[in-house]
Amino acid sequence: MVIDLDEHNVSPGHFMKIFEKTLQTREKSGIGTTGVLRMGQIICIASLKGGVGKTTTAVNLSTALAIAEKKSLLVDCDPQGHATSAMGINKAKLTATIYHVITGRALLETSIIKSDLESLNTLPARIELMRAEAELMSKPYKEKILHKLLCGLKETYDYIIIDSSPSLSLLTVNAISAADSLLIPLQCEFYALEGVEHLLKAVQFLKKYYNPKVKISGLLLTMFDSAENISRLIGNEVRNHFKQMVFNTVIPRSIHLREAAVYGRPLLLKDISSAGAQSYLKLAKELIDKHSGQHLDDTAKLNTSGRVDPEKHVFSKGAV
Ligand SMILES: Nc1ncnc2c1ncn2[C@@H]1O[C@H](COP(=O)(O)OP(=O)(O)OP(=O)(O)O)[C@@H](O)[C@H]1O
Ligand SMILES: [Mg+2]
Image (cartoon, rainbow, N blue to C red; front, side, top):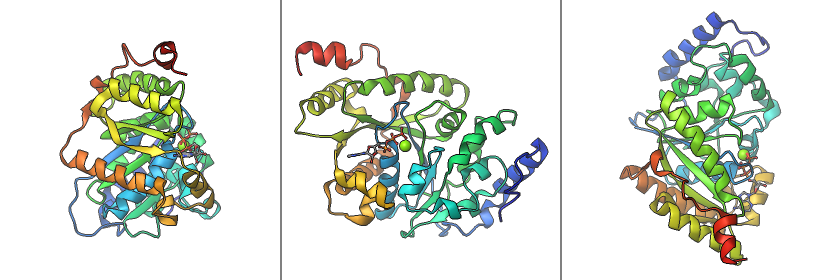
């Protein structure tokens, strides 16, 4: 059931009514329920640096987890809606998106879209999500809306993967506040750690006020090209500094990963044998092992003081 899609001004009372209804009625929903009681993990793919592979990771990791028979929900929390497009969802035909859910216009369960894989669903986003920020400003629990909505889905999904935007908007605050852990993609290039440093500052603040238990799933090296000096050097430096916090799996630079997004199909469903697809399967396995052993790191360890600075450190060695 979709509620008041065309109504743009939702009163606080109406908002709370729909919001509470979503929380109360989710158990009656058939989406994804298999009778298996799960203890799902909410993982936010986060970096305040743009273009580092957040969306590519969110889409292909959710798919890899689903292939590994983990019930997965991809939550697109970026107004750009790139994850939604990469899943091949026709945005023009959607009657409800995450915008309608978080602003109280639609129920969560009925806004979730199924995929070709039975274990993989998506909560889509579209450009109207940009309006949510202004609309939610006066709402109660505005930083925790997504948390409240997604928490109840933990019994339905093994993994809920949130794709976030590179800005520290109220949406990103919601995404980080909803997460049990953060997966931080790090592109092997000059200012690789800039995003980590900015994110760290934001996380310390958000942790204090909204999500004291948030952990680090891991740092993920993306767009790695072993033929490039810079990739190897940054990769080594990041590993030296962050040690076991960095996933062993590295995502290679791959034209197939880039193209798959354009075709609107996760690479794993297009060409599972390609190196890019295989790397995300490997990442899924490593993530599952990490989470089942609860080998997650405290955000306090994500300390960038005395950090690797590509300019001051790597380059001062005359590496390039
Ligand atoms: N491993 C890879 N190999 C080659 N291209 C990649 C890889 N990962 C991502 N890309 C490409 O790099 C660009 C940025 O990737 P992506 O959209 O995943 O980053 P993002 O962090 O989500 O960006 P934004 O901050 O704008 O949301 C895209 O064109 C994508 O197809
Ligand atoms: Mg993105």
